[in-house]
Image (cartoon, rainbow, N blue to C red; front, top):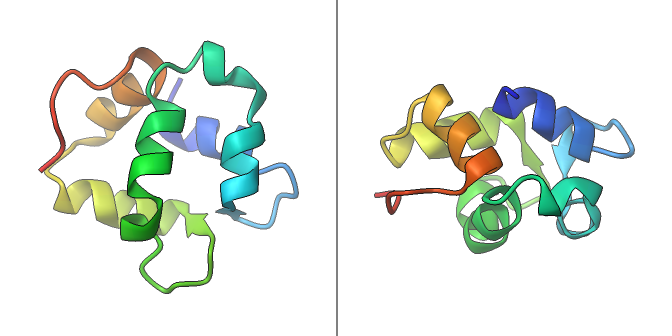
Length: 86
């Protein structure tokens, strides 16, 4: 599953951003081994405008800064991250 589809699925109120509550309550945590720990551990770093939500743009910009490709983010969210983001 592309990481963008996963983010849209987790965005329960469809406002274009993920709040910490949406991340914590995402039902597919058990099927998405890396999503919850990554988003929890990097929430403040990814929330560049400080609005307590992370948009796809912020995720893309943040993961690029960490040196990850879209494919690595998708794999990391679904299977768990096998490397430490920079």
